[in-house]
Image (spheres, rainbow, N blue to C red):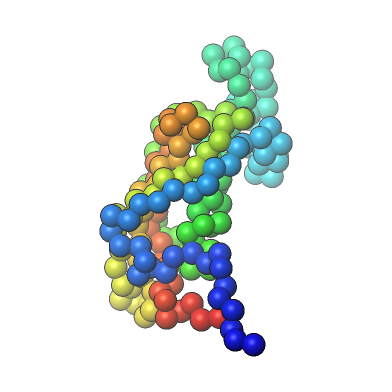
Length: 158
């Protein structure tokens, strides 16, 4: 039998030139997601545990921690662009633009802003993207610019 192509692998760095854009599928944040995240991380702050407090503070809904929004964005990227090719997360700047609530559906819009061969890691590249996390209504809730070490085509055997 001939070798079958493996699908679901992310983009090697050579396929991520400066200017390339794409977006991920969306994912809706549920109440259960928030409870699981704050429990697992110990973020048992009143902002995330007390709906009465939120109402009194002027919020109409259950807030999602910014760290959870970031984690969901990274998960969406791993399911699409980074599976099997991402080697290291080296640096990022992160800007939270607005709140996310239970019931919001998030996706990530990506633009490659830097892409080059790694000098110290043959067959790999350094790729920086500008990632916008966007809600179902088009509101941008987070922007971050990670620099990653990414495998090249030569390192994708198997």
